[in-house]
Image 1 (tube, one colour):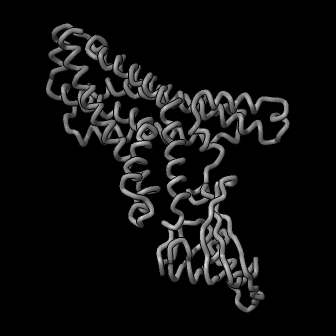
Image 2 (cartoon, helix red, strand yellow):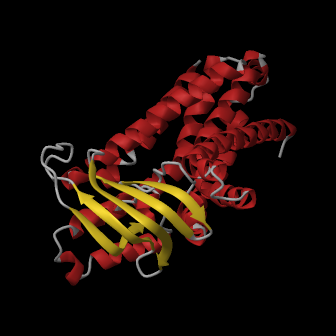
Image 3 (cartoon, helix red, strand yellow):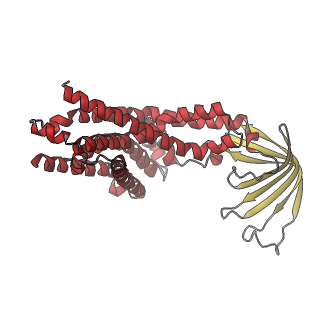
Length: 378
């Protein structure tokens, strides 16, 4: 590799590496705040488990960070060397734009191959392992949620209050069951209670002992003029699925956690005569195809961003980091908005949204090729 190519390759690789690391850190922090940090602050997770969960989650966020990091890295390097007239000097020496930027295109191809591997294997494996580890941590220490004399709201649809905690035994237990409008539907109070775990349903079982329950009117739970009788009980249990504790996962979202082989197996299973007879099978098959194509499109977005970033970086001629980062973020937001908007078309299979997921890539690549042509003419 000539000296010039090594110089450009090293500069772009180093900048892209730090850009991807920065974006990964931001995405990882966002996921941590949503799922982990509050559990750590409340003493529900230990520091070592928190670090372990963040490390497990890294490949998953890397699949989203790589395209944006590559885009930002290329814009930063080419914007800087163009502003310093290095590009003008190279072109004056008879070096064409394509020859000059061939190391960047090579890096983009390698990034695309890496992104395919991460999107279809390491990313789904990381997300699955992360959820399994977090579920195990909560299952092994369900009482970590419970803080004495504090309203506990981590269980969707319920508010819990415990007057005193003695080991696994909870005393003076209050629980409010909420409806979809977050109004109190039922109220239970028990002398004691404890948590158990049901492996078959992957649920926490809250067992209450020696208490009473008060049921509100289902249509008017806040109308106290229509009282309902209170019932005493010796023992009662409430099932709390761990999926609900983590916000629940739809069929569509679970598909993003599948590897390429699992997606193919899922598509094959939905095309069997038995499965095809179900009304929802056709829509689920479309979702599988969309999840597969989305992973492909996300991987090839690395190449699409590179094709657009090279002429943009040379033409913009800005060496300010903030300006180039702002441009990268704006382009990435436009790309992801188109991707999300196309995802909303999954209810219209006639439009072939699984193929339309390639539209953002085609638009970015087309615009990039046009800018390359304009750059070559100038």
